[in-house]
Image (cartoon, rainbow, N blue to C red; front, top):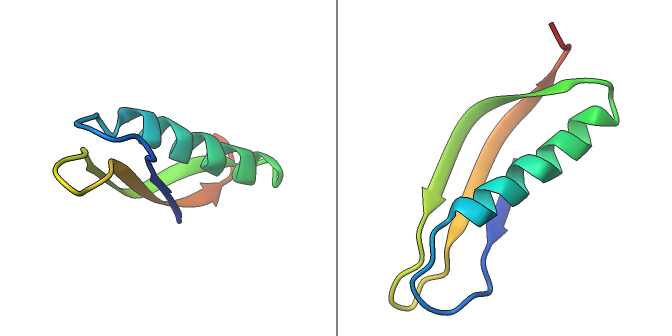
Length: 64
């Protein structure tokens, strides 16, 4: 599982955090010569007193 939170202030999208989470997951799986398979993805845009975040649950699988 990878969880990424934004340090940005204001109303921003969680798209950048999603990209960062997938990048970390891909780096982790590629070290095992495997690919990322998403189990779940939760994204939350920033709001009042809340930073944008993305949580990715995944497993590493053999490429097809």
